[in-house]
Image 1 (cartoon, one colour):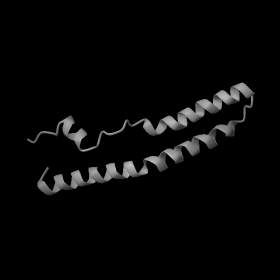
Image 2 (cartoon, one colour; image 1 turned 90 degrees about the vertical axis):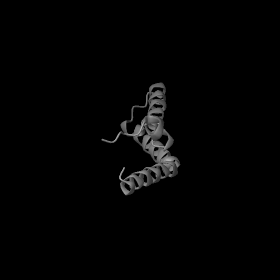
Image 3 (cartoon, rainbow, N blue to C red; image 1 turned 135 degrees about the horizontal axis):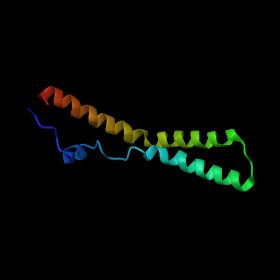
Image 4 (cartoon, rainbow, N blue to C red; image 1 turned 120 degrees about the vertical axis):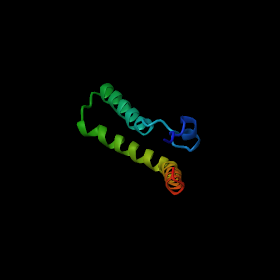
Length: 87
């Protein structure tokens, strides 16, 4: 029976480079800021919060796309090399 690679091996391969909730922080912060502005100005428009959150998600995706693509490429190379060598 073969042993699974240790966590240090997985970290070296780049699979654990960023926290999983990191892309959710910009939309959360934009929602908090918009809610604060709405509370100060007493403007209670429901659709006002969606546009900044969507823009924050799109900007986060655009900024992290190359990093995510590189991580997927590394992961794919590791998986295929393990298949080729028998794990």
